[in-house]
Length: 209
Ligand code: URA
Image 1 (cartoon, protein in one colour):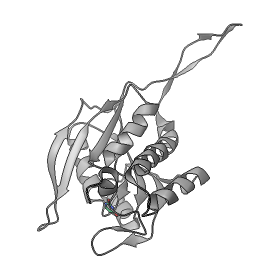
Image 2 (cartoon, rainbow, N blue to C red):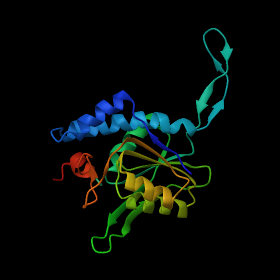
Image 3 (tube, rainbow, N blue to C red):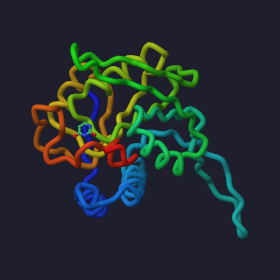
């Protein structure tokens, strides 16, 4: 079974509280999303291998450790996941980025893929899927289905806020996926929004409402 890690550092708690506040505007919201993602990614990237190569200091030679970020792939789920991908790219500038667009059919409630562009994946790819709100889990499950169909195996979902319902659904559908999140909230409401949550992350990021 994959891990569920709630990275509840005081700095993250502080920043997420400002993001929840309905008075926080899009500029600050975007900045905070990026900052929190960086802090979560610091924990989530512990699994990335390092390779050893000596380094010459001004005084001597010593063992050096370099992050092997050649096989890292970041996959934002459009559109709100984009704001998080930028945060991880600051930490891992050599990562490849794939994009997956999913919408929910209002009649059937099925997740429908409308866009997918992924770099070449294999079993060595270390994949970080970003989606700020793990609500019902439908989009994340579908995105991970697509990634697996394309050869991805080592997959971590990074979210900002997760609902217990979404965590359960994702763990049932994809038991080997690790989930990193900054907060585990109470529940979903009847419209699939996370309570207390922060509202619609995409609308708040891109000011579409
Ligand atoms: N997507 C959001 O943006 N917010 C929620 O609360 C749930 C899904």
